[in-house]
Length: 357
Image: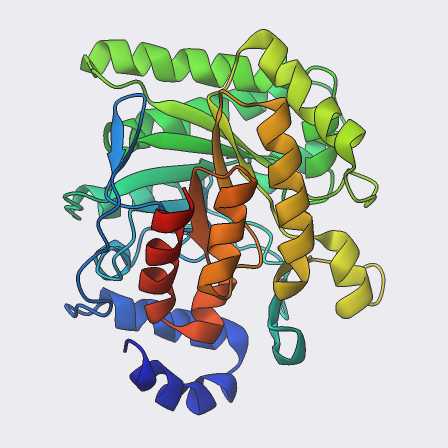
């Protein structure tokens, strides 16, 4: 499916509803085919974890670990599975995924559809990945988040869920990504901006990962990263001060190992794909997100020079990946670009960042 084959199939893909096309794509990736050729060698290491190159698959493409072998065959260095929840959730009502072809973008308000950590664990346990690192994107269940505005006790319930996911998936994960930045679960981003976020959720989860490492006698620590939004809880695009307000409490307490930046944009969704109220606006990924992603990763490199930084957002060409690395990303993730460009984008980006790093 690399190169011209995907280009030949694209007219068929674009005639298929976006969510159905996504499901069909996962089915193709589950087939025993090598779709991307040999991986570009560009070794990168961080705190004992080794990546064969700097290009990965972003969370959201394979939420339940269904197509790990096929994704690894694209030639990526790592795969971020999820968002994984402690128990199953159907996500938001349809329609919830749409291509915006003119803008080379995707609009989604999926709302964390997940088969649950137990099912994801069973699937990952059956899938040897050899030299491809695995990341697990995690979040509290949307019902838990919604209850936070109605009754006290959100943090203990959220911690219990995150601990459960970590306990089930720890043996296979190089790192976990805590996702409180999706715009598709009402109230989630307000938890990210809350004063107790670092102490009540991030620090306990990191301590739990350290406990699991000690029990398993792991030599390389399991890393914990936080996924950042391109805007605040009110939809205002993050400037340097707004980003600092999210990042500095985490740095001051030394409770995470890095950041993934950035999540989809609700502000762009209101402009490019407005939905009638009371529907959630969703988030935009793809080309319109590129300037925001570059700005945030650049500011993040100044704020957190010693942290692992993963850049994501608007990568539809090799130069886009290289630009993120030049701005300060150590690793780069793809999602929407794979929809529009197909598997060959992995190799193009891996070669480009090898020269940019």
